[in-house]
Length: 160
Image (cartoon, rainbow, N blue to C red; front, side):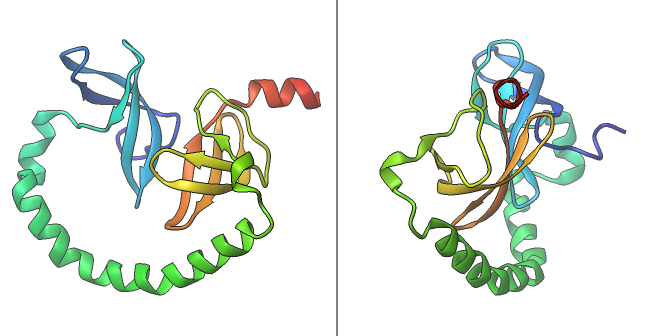
């Protein structure tokens, strides 16, 4: 059941090269609805999501995965291409008047406020759109909206 509804901050099994096996990981971010980055709950390393090998058989190998993505991705790509100019325009509006030198470096352990400018190592500059308790936020980047993990504890202590 928990395998069906994954969300940022949730826990999944992933292969950790540092630990040398499959361990529990906290979901850090998604890209296009798929888990992108996780944090190992054993060693604390943050890395790309690597699902367990046993689930690879029903989903086919990664080589054929690329082919199926290209075929089935055609319809989705058209939708994405239609949405891209809107996202890009909205991102440009959000970035207007913001000083890129004052951007906060993204970290899961940091707390943020709506309209904060953040600099993400993978997605680049983004603007916080909304905070989702207990530990998530939606951020608009040039390539789209992303849901990221963050720390609310210090934000709630300051405002409470």
